[in-house]
Amino acid sequence: MGNLLGGWRFKEPSTVEECDSTWDTDSEGEERAEEEPQEPACNQEPPAKARRSFYAAKDLYKYRHRYPSYKEPRMSEFRNLRFYLNKVPLVPDGVYIEEILTQWRGDYEKLENNHTYIQWLFPLREQGLNFYAQELTQDEIKEFQGSREARRRFLQAYTLMLDFYGIKLLDKSGNVSRSSKWQDRFQHLNESQHNYLRITRILKSLGELGFEAFKMPLVRLLLEEALVTSTLPNMRHSALEYFVYTLRDRAQRRALLRFAQHHYVPPQDFVWGPQQRRKVCGGGARPGKGEPARNLTSLHAECKEAAEERGMCEKRRSDQQPAGGKSKSTSSVRPLRGAGEWLQCTDTIPL
Image 1 (spheres, rainbow, N blue to C red):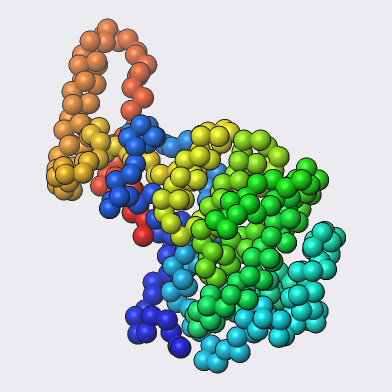
Image 2 (cartoon, rainbow, N blue to C red):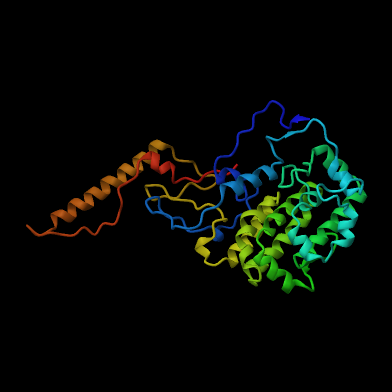
C-alpha cells in the first residue's frame, strides 16, 4: 500500500510532552481544579524526581497513532491470519495454534522459557524479536477481525496468557480478576520482569485486532495489584510507563492515572500527571480560558516594574543601616530571568 500518509511527511516527536496528549483537555474540559498541583513561581526550581522515558513515550505514541510513518510491505501473505486459522505453524518451532491452545495451557515452564511463540500469538504492526514472525498489515487486520474462527482462537490465546499470569477472564466485555492460582503466579510475575514486555505486546495486539475494550480492565487490575495490594510492586513502573499508554482513549488513560496517583508512594515522585502550570516573573498566574493572553512586551514591563520595586526596597534598607554597620542581606529572591528563560516556564503543549 506504500506510505500510509501518501505524500505528507510525518514529523517525529522529539520530547515526552510531544508524545503524550493524555492531559490535553481543551475540547473536553474534564479537569477538576482541585486536582491540579500547586503552581510554583518561575523563580523557583521544581523538586527533583524521576523522569519519564522518551523511548517508551515515542514507541507508544506511534502505536496509538497507528504508525504514521510506517511503510507497509507491497505483498502480504497474511501469515498471522493463516496461523490463527490453523493452516500454518509458527516458525521456527513448527507448532500449530491448536496444539498451543490445547496442550500448552498450564505448562508454565514452557510458557516462561519459550521466546518465539509470543510474536505469533499477539502480532503487531512492528517487528519483534522473532524475525520469522510477520508484521500485521491493515488489510490483514480487516480480514482477521472479520473471521469468527480467528477471533475465537485469539481470545483463547489471551485467556491462556492470563492464566499464566494468575488472572482469569470473566466475561465477553473483558473484565478480569485473580485466578485460583494467583498467589504463586503473582510471585513469579513479580520476579520475572521480561513478562512485562510481553504484557505490553498483548495490550497492543488487543487494540489492533478489535479488542480495545479489553485493555482497561486488565491495566486497572495490574495497577491495583502493583500500587494498592502490593502483590506486584516490581510492576508499577512498567504499568505506568507502558501499560497505561497503550490505551488509545485519552479519558481512560486519565482515569487510570488519577487512580494511580491517589495510591502512589511517595506522591511527589509521580511524574505521569498533568504538567504543572508555572507563574510568570511578575507573580501572576497564566491566563485561564477566556482571559486575554499577555504579550511579551507586557511581560517585560512586569519584570521591569518588579525589578524597580525590589531596587527601591533595597535602597530603603541600606538607608536605614547604622553608619559603618554591616548588615547581612535577608533577601532570598534570585535575579529576575530574561524573556528567554521565562519562555521555558510555560507549559509544553502536548500533541
